[in-house]
Length: 563
Ligand SMILES: [Zn+2]
Image 1: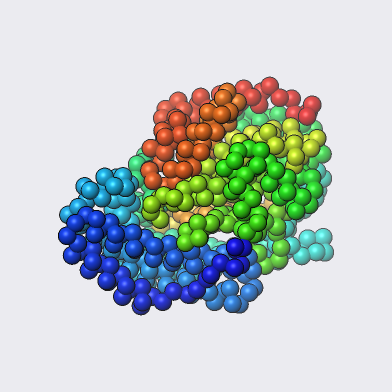
Image 2: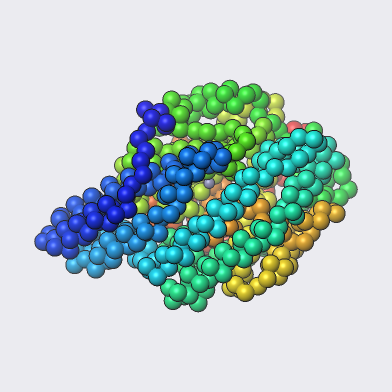
């Protein structure tokens, strides 16, 4: 069946509430653990249905934000979200008080109950209206940024469409296109500040209503983090400052030589004088090549990717009215993932494809996990699948980049390493924001600039006014949409680099470890999944240092001028 043939419907909240009451009764009156297990599995099926339809509604709107019908469906699912959380919450409370907890834990592992404990701490009927308000504000951000119409050189672009000019080989084009981008942000900065200010204060209020000092602890629980906290994260960020920032400084120096420039400005983001490597061929051609690649990589990935193509489970190319960004979503009722992206002719198209395919492959691999909550792991674990897939597909990059393959690889590694300080900066910023919910937009921007000087000391915006005021973070959608979802990329990158190293040493073993990790889905917590995959935990002192040493050794051996 193709994606658009999958059945979709609006579910009825009252019906759900009634059937949940029946399950609750069954569960509470159960005279054996098996009766409780059956009730849990029934609820699980209902949840799968709800999550599938909600994901479809959201996806259809992302594919065309100007489609009124799609908007109405998405609005419907947004509006019932908090009610559905409330309905689920009542059942989770009952499970949390079950007299058969030990047996349930034996059946599904301890994560089943930990997930429920965390989930219960993030909700109370008292915050229901505030959650609705939060969704509204998040949607305002999407609407504003997805609807951006930027005139550049007489033509109109959206934010993703402008992207290729930022990495043009001509410096004046790079700078002018960034000017166009930042003029749009400057024109909309008040609106963006207003949305964020409301979000921060609202999240703070939600947290204090639930009994927390501020939003941070709640934010971590919303991310489902059960086995580490802000202290571990702060220590990890410090390791990035100590071990990665100096290497990035060296890379900047190297780039000056490559580009033949005596100073690098923010808009000199390209890696080669002639511009960054570009994928060769039309999107259709690239997808055909990807299909061959996944067949050659392994049987599992071959079957998986053929299915993605045949069942039209991907929407990859940028077009007007499409929401920016790339993501993978899933319809658990149908055991199917879906990939969304905005190809725009840059090398990013290929990394997005392999990245999102990594997510989708994991989701597909864990479709036989017994519980919906085990389908996806927490995000820092999920990003291991995606970022490692970017590396596992390296032997096939020739198909996409031809004579520019080595350049792509250099850029990929240098870029992945250089990303770490930025990721830590975004994370640090958010900790400060939620510790200081009363800060003004201006103070937030000042803080951003202060953190940039620690994590990104080489950034020089030249005379680009908007980023000089400290507002550049407004373009980072996670900050608005999913607070604290960012350090995840840096933790996962540290793990993905380990897979990259392993793959060079013993590719079969590395692949087996990877597939084992994918199959486990979300059945275990982050630290346990890392050890299941045979990787070292990024929080451990020395782990990042070792990884960086290996990566920079590889980079040192390459003279980019010869590529
Ligand atoms: Zn991802």
